[in-house]
Length: 261
Image (cartoon, rainbow, N blue to C red):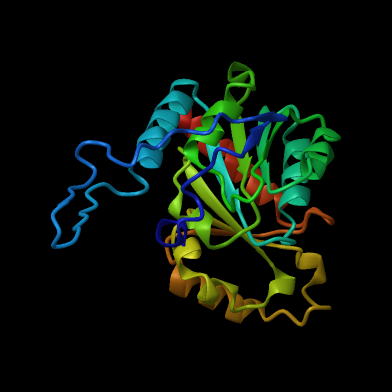
């Protein structure tokens, strides 16, 4: 994962709404970060701070800010091709007149998903991450500043399509929503246990294709409960609308609870 391989240590190349982020300067000799022995006997380096410490601190700041706005925030994660954008577009369209939704979209390249979401009349901010395989709390903070949060009840963060590295990054969300489609196989949760274990909600998508994909629902649900017994599970089809009523009722309930209604 990112905390081990280092792929997420430099996020200076990400673009928020088309503008490049300013790269951060990391001095190699920050006091307190490590100790050096410059004698001829060699060098010993002791790393004392978590690589994710800064992100976690910013995520808590995001969470507090979103809560002050009474904003329900969901970090939506999946592998590529699971139907995230179609699911969120249908969710936003069906919420019209019930809850006001906005979306922050993360992609390595192109703003295609953001353009699709805008066709449903949803306010959208694009983050183009370049080579970065996940969103982080700072990217979300900068993107959120481009939205009128006072005019929203629900903020969806469509993360980069990846079930590995985003598991490490708290964005300040209330819930992590993990999607997987019936076309991906019943064992998907077992292949990516850290991500599915971190989920507060799991959405099984593309249920209109279950028969064609020979999807074993009972086995899939058993695998989900084995890895993520605490998660709320929804089975939906954005194409036919199956299961969407229950999903929308859940969002309304969680939003009302946050607003104290």
